[in-house]
Length: 269
Image 1: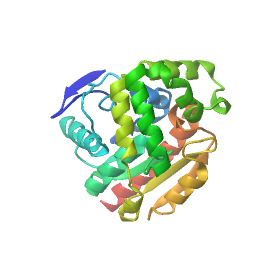
Image 2: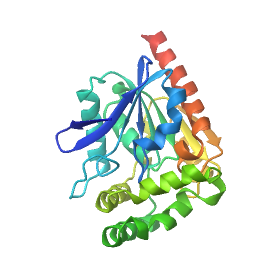
Image 3: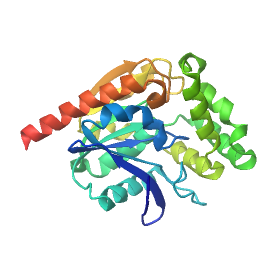
Image 4: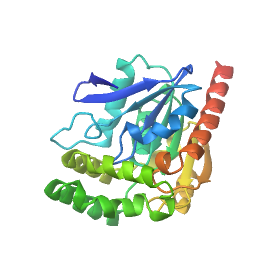
């Protein structure tokens, strides 16, 4: 593991794999770079894989002031530059991580080969904003134990808990999250409204829905996919947290999609 000082924050990251093309994996709200551990054996064969803990998450710095999705996207841009990965990269984001990927791609389309948006959280309904605010306030006031079971009941429902060890490990990482950093990440997501910009995102996109996703159900993800000019839609047997709940299926989809995208890009070059 490594840490790097950026303009506003220090991030933890890991860079692994022997492939020629950089692939950036962006974790979900409440997650960390460990969310993608089970995907690595499949992806590292073909890609140079960058994973990192977002500000406020994992072992990255925990700011004590609010931040936004735009701040997350700025962190990603600076991290890529600092690591010498300024050329086109592949981006895969899970849930709120998909919003960071989309903002990065909208800011600089030429720097992106293609996007994989997994259980994408690209907009938040007004009735859910109140829930996110309440969850943030409770986490800051009472700690992560006060919200863990209600949160995971939706994002990690019993139907996808076939591997008890995987669920226990994920729950433990969730409980170890910094409550203030987690709360600010909730509030950053509450402000996301990216659906109106999707028709201008003229990049290859893989959009993955989880059959058992209670937060971003397949019908909602399919409708979002229809707004993207160059989207491929697929559904896998997962809940909201795909890299933990359906790692093999997710990794296979990512590997095939990004191999095709980068092959086409090289042919056009």
